[in-house]
Length: 245
Image (cartoon, rainbow, N blue to C red; front, side, top):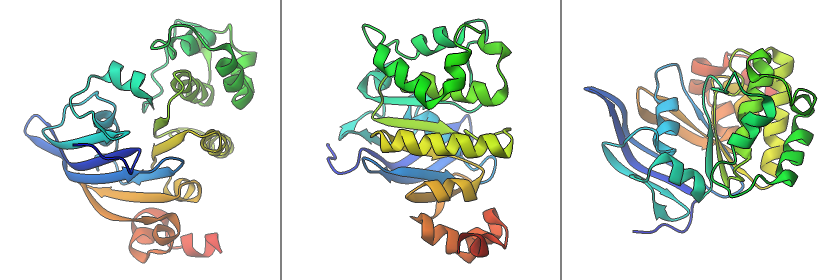
């Protein structure tokens, strides 16, 4: 079975951790050029969704299609070579390697490191170029987040999965990271974003899905989600409506 419409389509995805049902029939689609946000509280299944899509967690049932191909049982390294990359929660940079060595590792599926690509990443994140010979473990949290995103971009993905890019960062840095995500999108990379900072994510995204205990309970355009009273109460605080006008 092929699906040619969406770049990514998740159909009736069920994922278990042992006997715990982490995802229960999740349906999500992402079209080329979009930024799509997945919102929800801790434990809702957001990270599980991304890990399943990128081949790091097996699905119990359901399907994941990427570029029309069924990738439900395809291993993670092959999914990367198909044009998808994943910047995981917690950054997971290689702390004993330099910034530049970390970036080169992001291109492991390519025969050669594309130096033009590296130059573009340094333009997106000038701080990384300044610190390119520095060990990744000596970077600040914000710099490590930039490095995690930069490393994911080195494989030239069509689809970039971002898991909690603003977690633990100061507000100014959060603003800078979100501005860069917009630039990445404008350069032609489709983005699926998991984020607890719901307001910032919805201002950036075209559409959003809300997960609660492994199920999608709400989906719509960013405007619809920002204006929904239920979403405001649960995730945005009562002032959200006033903020966006």
